Length: 405
Ligand code: AMP
Ligand code: MG
Image (cartoon, rainbow, N blue to C red; front, top):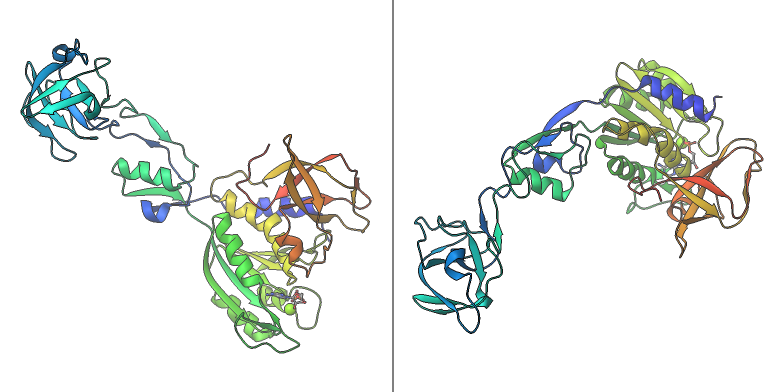
């Protein structure tokens, strides 16, 4: 049996380097940029109006007031997508819409509310300054400016920005391809009829969701019963960067994952970690494929995924190999009276004066999914370690976007 730290070191020594993959911007959303993005054109692309109104020459209207309006002649219109082609000369103007190109000769926009139109003239009653309500070419950014840094996530605004620049496809960190093999003769799906001795397979959906939330991609998913041949056959077929097996990794007569992996050419890197829950975790490798044998108990499976597999997926997306944590203050004493380091699930609450408070889920059994669904993260306590009420400790959070406070 190895320690948590040793397990992490072995994983660190065996993970591949991140790779790039080109995707359309739409496919690239929720992925991470593999390159810096610089502006290939200025923004705005052309000088245009910020308001609906009249594009005028400052020198014709700068003395205008409500008592003594400046009267100018409307000679045309510039609409969004249909610009005015001519030039505006002395005492002339054009009607203009928001986003429409400013015509040659104009330098200022007067809002509809500050003018009174008596076709073909318009009385300009107030204008504050030259250049009012004009959006200048390049005022947001110029060609060549750095807009998005390598490693940033492409969420909705970044996708919008890329497409506004005319980008159709982009290099992102290639998401880790993960396959899932759930084992267990006792398992049925939700919706299937269920006998007294059966349970529903909750690990499949939990792992799929966790993989996707971490930024990985589920490429295959299978469920098989506890049969040696079926396990060997299934593992022989799966192609992925990471294979996650659920169940069948302990010392029972019907636990076949370890043997099946090794008869498929996987080399064991570790089996069993001094921790609770998740002691039976198995890690093996064949060529560039990593295989994790997660214990079947749902809490153990999820904790092993979160502590050992998720950092691999996020590191292949360009983040440092690590865990999101926040510091919290224990509301009550929390202790580990067991013999192994314990990953204790805790709930975070926000204190009115700032900072997080920690309470531990009362029922911590590795078969008790509510210890996860009611928790925001976990703390790791060594045997006999006590966190006293009022003391602070780092919490590993399940939500990997949570920002440290
Ligand atoms: P195992 O690791 O296969 O010995 O399974 C340990 C415990 O986890 C047993 O009580 C199983 O019934 C349960 N278990 C295994 N796989 C799943 C699963 N996919 N969903 C829910 N419970 C499971
Ligand atoms: Mg089993």
